[in-house]
Length: 147
Image (cartoon, rainbow, N blue to C red; front, side, top):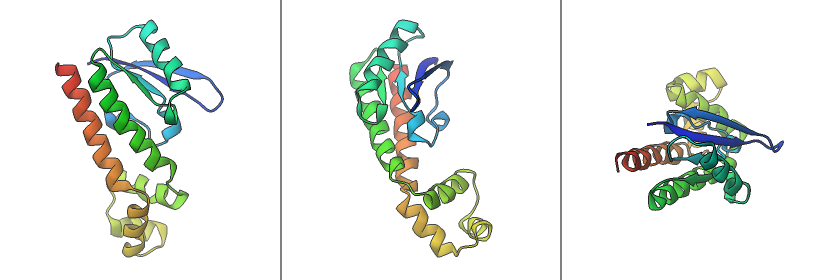
């Protein structure tokens, strides 16, 4: 399924891309999650999503043919953005390595910390919450595309 995404940067610039959107494609940086238009590709729909993203929390907006599904996906992305904005640099280091598939032991060795410290940083970073949010958003998008 093709989607239109529009990304708002801190400089006020927007980047548009037509893509097959999967939640795993959403950057871990919440500032890069600006808006997602879940209607068929159209510059008018992308413009609507960008305009709405300017004033929405976390600069995240979802526009779709099914407003209920769009609102559900948007809510999940707002919650994910809230978790990601609170993540420390140390939390990002652990989360990025976990996302690459490294074990807690391998991460500990790489960062020079104990496995226990890796676990504590992953918990503080909201890694599990982020992963569940990605799965939920993907399932909602798939359900909306099938409808």
